[in-house]
Length: 432
Image (cartoon, rainbow, N blue to C red; front, side, top):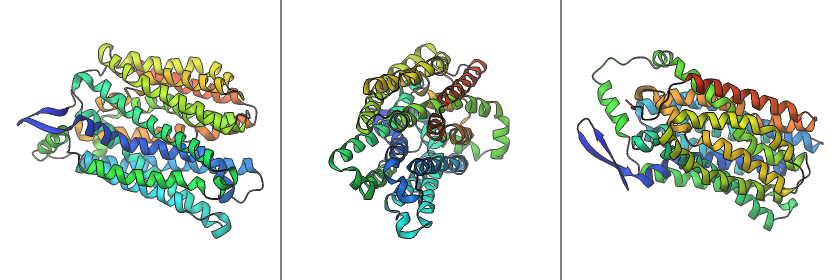
């Protein structure tokens, strides 16, 4: 299938639909492959990068580095969002992917504490910062590229492919983890085998650059640029201020679901293995099952939103997550099936929201600032609430206060519910 869009000057044939979906999604797949790999393999390399006699302290330090990577996402959102709105979605996707792949490579080859001392954790932080900076721009550029390329009646369905890609990244990391733990013992994993996932991530980044290099720019951006040359350009800050209500909606829409997503995709298995005593391989199998189920339900939720509207989906995802979090967290113990049920249950409900989030974000902003308008508030919110999820969950669980984490998640999802009730219905909205 080739995407054909109507433009002011007639009809223009764009990139094939499969190329658009794969090219836009692969960056987010790499993002979650890297992030999941960092959390999944942190138990193997944490003691090598932090001079700590306590394994728990070293693990918490490593998860703090994981959170640090999120701090540069807002800056990446600003930089690459502006780049996307000025130079094009395709150009920004190529630039952000280059930085992300470089960060992966740094982590994969960084020497350990025993080799270079304090420089070792600094290199680890540098790699995470590069990943965070590059991926901060990934959201604005890739979400916008995908939604602007989609046929209007099927934007929800097309948007659902983005979180399929994100889930595929986590699933790939899980599969790599299962394979490595099958062929390497714990001692070998700690010495060198943990590096393999990050080196694979760097190679995946190179492949993403090849795919994206073959894409064409979206018609919506080209038309906007043509119009901009005829008018006096307004400052980007003024445009953001003018669309401040949409910016606030994005922040509130994202807070609860991003914490929920990180809870099930990253935090749950760390909690199950470190605090509840579940075998690491069993936890990886549970996560892999959850990823498959999560990906499978995305298109159904996305297609539903194209029929009944975006707001019902968003309400189901956020309010449902608030209602099920306590019973699902209580299910997690040292058993495989309980963890699998908790992860699958939480992700199926959340999928109502994730399936259409890219479409909703893009539909809230005009073309001239769409990438920046999406990237800045989204990256900031994910940095604050998403990046800290595994650390908070592990820390509070270790102190016997898991109920505090559940209350925190419920409160943020209720904030998202308020945002949904205040926002307009965006299904079928023009992307002008």
